[in-house]
Amino acid sequence: MIIDIHSHFYPDSIFDMETRFGSGSWPGFRKVSAEKGMITLDGKDYRPIYDACWNPARRIEELDKYGVDIQIMCATPILFAYEKPAKESLECAKLMNDEALKMCEHNPRRLKTMCQVPLQDIDLACKEVGRAMESGHVAVQIGNHVGDKNLDDEGLITFLQHCASIDAPVLIHPWDMMSPERMPNYMLQWLVAMPAETQLSILSLILSGAFERLPKSLKLCFAHGGGSFAYLMGRVDNAWRERDIVRKDCPNLPSSYVNRFFVDSAVFSNDALDLLVKCSGSERVMFGTDYPFPLGEIDMGALVRHHPSLKDDEKASILGANAARFFNIEI
Image (spheres, rainbow, N blue to C red):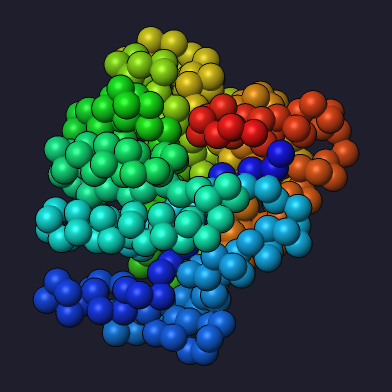
């Protein structure tokens, strides 16, 4: 059983967001043709997409092409709307969550979905994740920060504690990347800032001591292979040993916390996946593609299937078994 845990959708029915809320800077959508569309922002073209983002039949065709049995979808992070008024963000979340379930109705055995929540308001976020899980979502996707609040913020810790209490797995996805003014070209925000944002979110939980306050039953997964964390874990351990300001809130060696979270396999090279497995263990890596975006794994599953040194049981764990347990999917 092969389960892709990291893919995105973007409904073709949200072009009226600015009209709906009466304020600017909402993502929109323009249909270019039956198979192509354009995400818009502030009245400008933002990102071209194609119908796999909104057409479940096309999605199933491509899953069949690459031999993927189940795919778990989550919203494109531009839709998080954490900077908006909380009630508007909640309405947006409910709209996206209900649209995602409609897409899954095309083939509920093959398509699953994660919800989104208005994370800037913890009470509303807790209520919506509960509603969504009861409605059929298998997890919740959140951004790695809300404004200048990292994951060690007390409100966000409260939300994660609530997710643990209702057995709602959490995918943490980088978004709203740092220093865009220094990275305007060449997709550097995605190539440099996105991995850094992910490492920042992991270290925020580790070095703050947040993991000491979160139950071990909490299911956390960081997208994009955990960003730059695996490569720089030795640097962090060294800093913890040598500097008291690094370890003042963190009672244990930072690398000892790798058993508290999962990562996906979207790292795009054999050496990177080898390092990731050595860092996290094959039992804590799950197959993820970032489909259907061009920076995702186009030949879905090829990196794991054809990896030269992974054993067959490790490949099976990464490709599906780990995800089945994490998301409570019967296979």
